[in-house]
Length: 226
Image 1 (cartoon, rainbow, N blue to C red):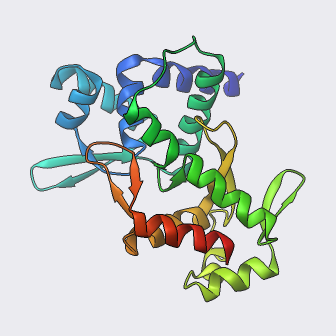
Image 2 (cartoon, rainbow, N blue to C red):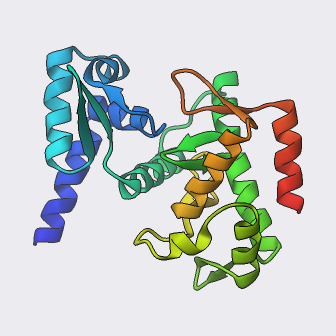
């Protein structure tokens, strides 16, 4: 019964509204302090610290000490994938929402999902790679083709180095807003780093939302057609 007990424990931890808000805030991939997470959760600092202690003990978040401060992050990409999938189920099965505002529209278009690109732009990117044969789906799982390996190596991404690591090079993540898959794994993370390094996007302060600049949108569309 151990698996059932672990599932119940994780479900209980994630299901608390305050802890759920904290974990959602960490989905942006930025390390945050307990005070910042308390604001996200709408609770006092002592309560936030208690919640964070439980999340840390369960292995859902990591804490790094720097000077007088403690900074919290999601433990790894597995936790980020779990949260994104839960958001997808919630969006599909939850109560009907009123029409979202502009901020929601921007998040649906492009956002950070822990360390990779999500939203409509992330889905479009994976679709393009599959259509061009750079990524193949084998039994529903994404696999990098030989053509894909050459393409991304020539784009300055060390795919061969990724293959020597434990993290999958390609993995799909169910996009909660588009309700289709976007690209995760070490390749997904490297592509988001590339997009940001080239200045194609601007990160919206205090949000997972990223906005493509006019030039960045053009370059991104060309990248998907190369």
